[in-house]
Image 1 (cartoon, helix red, strand yellow):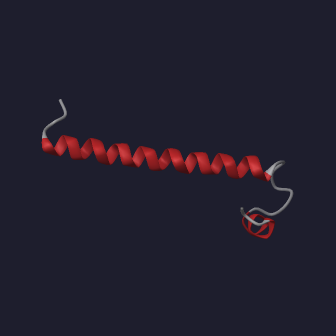
Image 2 (tube, helix red, strand yellow):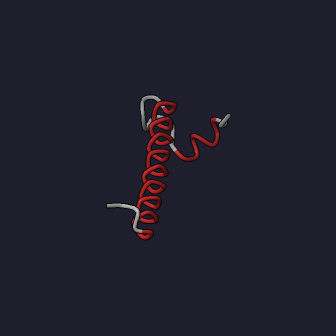
Length: 53
C-alpha cells in the first residue's frame, strides 16, 4: 500500500491523531468531488441536448 515515508512527507508525524483516518477522509472527499463533477457534466450534456425539463 502506501509507505509510511510517503505519508510523513505529506503530513508530518504528530499533526493529527490518526493518519489513516485522515487520509481515508481525504480519499472519500476526493471521490465525492469526482462524482459531483461527473454528475454535473452529465446534467449539462443532457440540458444541451434538450432532454432535461
